[in-house]
Image (cartoon, rainbow, N blue to C red; front, side, top):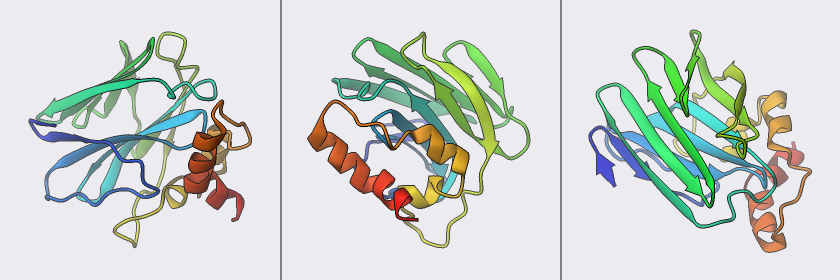
Length: 182
């Protein structure tokens, strides 16, 4: 679906898709571990913002509904997994991310937001970080994106299994197994 300047894409691959058109914003949410989903907001192959949503193992193994769009410098979206609803809006010009109805002002360079306990009213922002999301490869692996930060790797809780062993194996193969082999 493409609305305004934002496009919503869903990917179950181990690497980020290449943005097909310069100037087009791509938003993608995908699982990174049994407890964490990541929402990637990118433009011109550059990740501008990464929101990591953490909950109980398997919280997103329910029917999903997502929608999003944008206008001008604002990208927003809603993710729904069963009874869990996550709303976000990122205003690039003001450098403010809104999670639910809470504003999260971002300092210069901050582009990664850790949200924990998403089952409780959309969660709590526990930390904002500045990450270097510049890559030599046009299609970096997810592990290479989050791997440089020990804090982010710990946030993923790769050691905690989800409720579905087959889904867990696929998730682990895409991100956690690569992180553990480093």
